[in-house]
Length: 142
Image 1 (cartoon, one colour):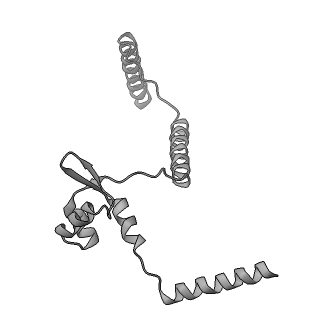
Image 2 (spheres, rainbow, N blue to C red):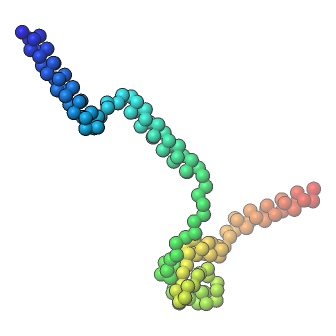
Image 3 (cartoon, rainbow, N blue to C red):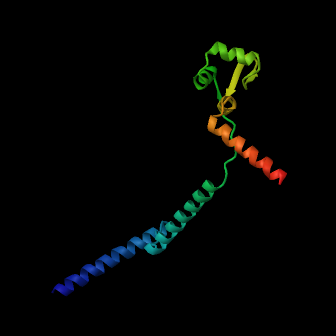
């Protein structure tokens, strides 16, 4: 009795599955089951390509981007100078800036480079340069 009941249930299940298949096909909504290993392989390929893009993007030198314009308050904070001092440097053309009409523009990277130009060398840096210069002169004489 149990085997007849099982066969009947199986037949009913297969019939329902077949009807569902035919209905989806008639509606052009047939969903095909894919091999899960094939899907995993596709996803791994995508992940590998993304990792490759990241790797090549990090190894390539980035183009130098000119900084975003900053206002005088930011320049004052960067340089530790008062606003009137900055306006005086602008008037004397001693600080890098741009002017459009009555507006002053500064670029952060230019301001930082301008600050670095005023860097004083330490005693050890001066001694290292002197030694390199002496060695260079000895090499030229020999």
